[in-house]
Image 1 (cartoon, one colour):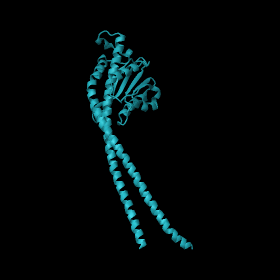
Image 2 (cartoon, rainbow, N blue to C red):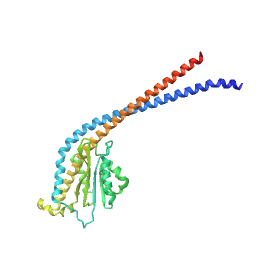
Image 3 (cartoon, rainbow, N blue to C red):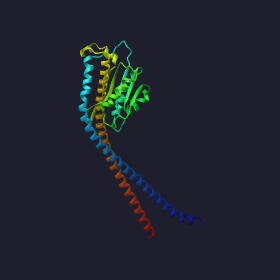
Image 4 (tube, rainbow, N blue to C red):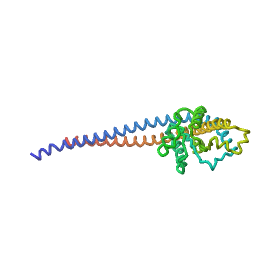
Length: 297
């Protein structure tokens, strides 16, 4: 009786094993199909973002050519007056990190934050940071959150204007932090596939007034110097924001192009895996049908 029961149970076990194998094959096919569909959707998004970034880059490059005279004129003032910080006074430094609120553009924002981190590693007691864009704040707040003076948000969604730069310059000069010297850290556009993290020096009002060659610009009182410093700071911030916007769009265009190519390679691999798995499932099912038909004859 025991042998007879075993004989009866054996075909049922084989049938259950075959059914489990079929279910596993179908589950694998379904998983690969879902992954393939997901990667194809991602590729469509990256291709669309590349096209949008290409259009924005063309506009940003045109705007940058018009904004460069603002930066060059402001830099020449500091160069010709040969401003040097007072070594006897306690230095108070200020870093203005020019980034944006948007990502998916390679290491554009990371490079700015890395340069500031390197400067802050040596001395950060009397140093403050003004973040233009939320990306720099997110990176620098981990180590130097207490040194962040203020953050300017809503940067990068629209092309930067001189009004935006004027508002930032006004906030920098009215924070109550009397800095003696500082730097604007930004990305300088070089070509479609290249940019360089650069700095521009800035100086506070008392430091500028002590310059010996300030008389080159005729007699200037403190009110005139203060007004000009606000205008020159706004000009430098406007120029660096334009440089950063152009670098960001070109980097995003390159990043999205690379992402689209990677998605295409992944789609080819998943398609090949899907076809091989599907062929294996069909072959196994045919073998089971033939084996079952042969067992009945």
